[in-house]
Image (cartoon, rainbow, N blue to C red; front, side):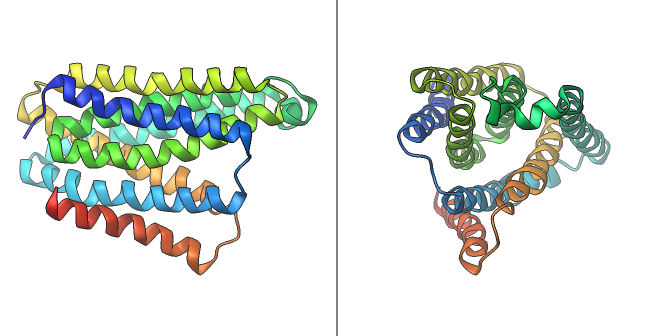
Length: 248
């Protein structure tokens, strides 16, 4: 069942508001590395569950092997390309990039990277709602949890760079609003696609979200020494979506 556009936009507002709020909280108290790792593990489990429980079954039911292959390959290539551009920028900035926070320089590369990540996440939410209202709602929950961690990390990094608290809140909130704008764009472009095109788009979203889980959320989460409790938060996130999927 597809929700009216206004309802889907309201769902797109929630993750953005939560990211802005978490960024504001981080200006008052920097979260511990363990707490951020736990949120990342939990978010990874939630996103992975949405992909496997909601999106992949829709892709398989479409029975469009050609479109699925094309969409999946483009999704992987796009995410690898975005990551490569980010790493290229870091190399071009050279040693100054690694010392910019300590030296109090404005971390423009980090802000640009977060903005790109947010735009991609918003488009993924549009793809989720294109798959159906239930998939979109669950993906909105998953991305809300991810954006909590992103808001905390962004505000903390800006604070280390010497950015004033008021400006940290404004920047984090502005980046968060990109999520809603890109989700609106995704909903506009994907709302009335023919089935064969939708199959490719859902396959693209599957690849992008799997990349998010394996190459971003879990990689960052493992910067903190792994413990059984941290590992368990991943499975708790997966179980939450599994149960919600039964009754949503």
